Amino acid sequence: SVILSPNVILASGGPGELFRDSVYPKNCFGSLGLALEAGLELSNLTEHQFGIGTRRSEFPWNLSGTYMQVMPYVYSTDAEGKEYNFLADYYRTTQELVSNVFRKGYQWPFHATRTLDYGSSLVDLAIYRESRLGRTVWLDFTRNPQAVPGDLPFSLERLDADVRIYLENNEALQETPIARLQQMNPLSIELYRQYRIDIARAPLPFNVNHQHMNGGIEVDIFARTNLPGCYAVGEIAGTHGVTRPGGAALNAGQVFGQRAAAHIQRQLMRTPYAPETPETLAPALKKAQNWLEANSNNPNGIAIETLESEVQSRMSDYAGFVCHAREVPSALEAAREFNRRIVREGINIPEPRKLSEGLLRTQMALVSEAVLSALDFFIRQGGGSRGARMLCAEQGEQ
Image (tube, rainbow, N blue to C red; front, side):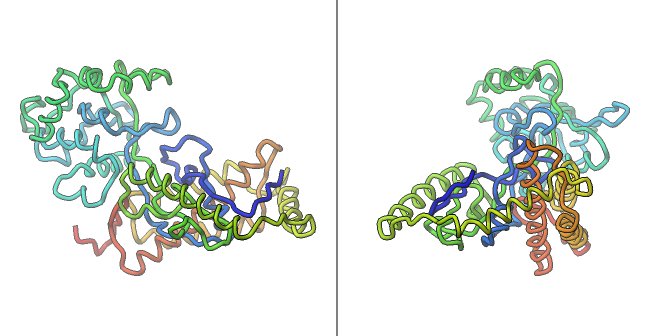
C-alpha cells in the first residue's frame, strides 16, 4: 500500500537492531535508515545510553531501580562452571563494593566519569571485562554479596550513609536480597515469573546492553527535519544529548509531538493539501518494485541472517560503551565495504513474509556506517571519553 500525505511524522523509536547486546525487544528497527535514504540530516550519533539488563536471548529488561538497590550477589562463571567474585578485584572494601552495587539502581546508565574514583560505573566496566574473558555474569538474589578478600564480610550495619538511609526509609533491612526485593518491589519478582524465570530460586544471567539512542534526526523547535513536510519526534530525533535523564526524554516526545501537530495544522490552514497524481508517484514506486523483485529469492544475495549478525557484532564489539579508538577506522571501513557489497550483490529475501525484515536490515547497515562515521570523526578531532562511551587510547590519561 502507498500512503499519501503532505506531512509525515517519524516517531518510530530507536534502532533496537543495531547492537547485538541490546535491551530493545526483537524487531525494533526504528527508521533512522529510512531517514538516511531520504537524505535527512542526522546529529549526535556518537551519543547513546548503555546499562545492565537481562540478555536479549531470554527476556530483555533493564536491571535498574530495586533490582540493584537490594544488593544481590554479582558474580561470573567460566566454561567449567567455576565461580568468580570478580567485583572484589575492582573495589577496595566490601562496603564500597556493595554500596556501588546499590547505586547502580539509580545510576543505572553507564557513564564514563563514574568509572573513576571507584564509582558505580566501574561495575559495568568489570562486567565488560568478564564478558571479554568468555564468562557469564549473574545476579543472585538468594545470596548477599561476598566479601573483598582480606576485608570484613557483608553486613547491613556497614553500608555507606546514603544506602543505609534509603533501605531504612523503605523498611528493607531483611537478611537476603530476595527478601529485600519482596519488601520494596514484589511485582519485579512476578515480572520475571511471567517469563518462566524465578529469581527467588535461581540466578539471573545479564550483561551491559544498548538501551537508548541519544542522537538521531536533526530537528528544529517545531520538530521539522531538513525535508519539507517531514517531522521527527521522540527517540528518533537527535535531541537527547550526552546525558539523557529518562523522564526528560519522555517529556521531549510529548512536547515535540504537540509542537509538530500545531505546526502542521497552521501549515495546512495556509496551504490546503493538493494530492499527488499517479504520474508523479510512478518513478518512486517503480524503483521500490525493482528493488523488491531483484532481492526476492536472490540466491547470490547476502542472507538476512548475515545482515543481522555482521552489523550487530561490529557495533557491539567496536562501537559499544567501551570502545578502542584505534579499532574504529577499520570498523568503519568494514561497514562501508559491507554496504558496497549489499549494493553489488543484493540480499536474499527467501519468502514474502521476510520482505520488510530484509529491507529494514539493509537500512540498519546504513545506520551502522553512519554511527561509525560520526565516531571516527569525533575521535580524529580529539574527542575522548564522555557520557555513555569510554574511549580507550594509547595516549589515555587514566
